[in-house]
Image (cartoon, rainbow, N blue to C red; front, side, top):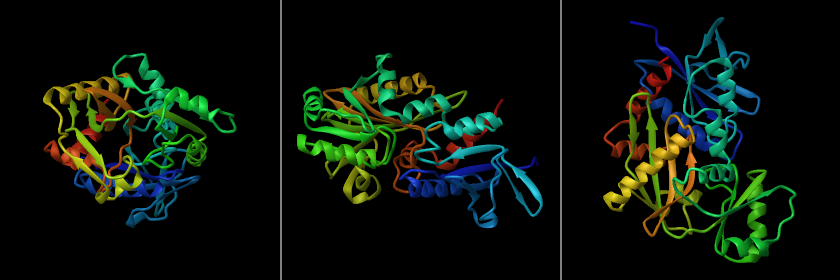
Length: 329
């Protein structure tokens, strides 16, 4: 029997999603087939890169070649699975590092990761393809002066204020009154150096999961989000009592097919790889793009594992497919 491949599951990161990432990494590591692979969890936090799984806990990762030494024996990795939400896992930084070391990884490369992580530039890029509707927005940078009234005239009320780079709805505010805009912007700047203010599109939130191998496309059942809060915020995402997540979404077969086609086209336009979750608003039978998540959550509360289950697959099967696909020359 050939030697098992060593797999590094990346956890942590340098954003507010650190602890969500730890949960995602634990779930992924638990699901990866141990009969086929040796699985190690690597925690990245600033300059500290260490193994945190039981047998190797505390061992330091050598950044020059992404290896570690255990009892005098050097160990390297055959492939990387990132569960880091936010920087440096979802914005292209680690992808560039592994590209330079020629270590394969599951998921999107540098271009797609950097582009999708920047909401404003992703939206601007996608407008060129005429695939999906994109809401009007305004980009603010730190220390930039802005006129609240002009923004409200352009976008209307309510509007959404979001960190331009970030996830899990940290720093997101639905602004209903002009006088609340400044506080919302300050809140968003705590999460990112740039803030995007978006026109509010009233409708139903629909999410679609997708991954493609070299041979086949897999589009997962759609999810309909019915938040009990103002919107699908952090509490609604991670506390089951604050939203209803309906799979499959209660929309027509025609609209389901339309959403699946749009998701596939966006996936290709952005050069995505691995599992991606696309978020939309459905208004008057038209889909409006919210964002693409290139490293979606894999916690017990996350949507992608639920989508996979509804598709009649297991998370273990999906990661085996993705790992084997990434290892192919």
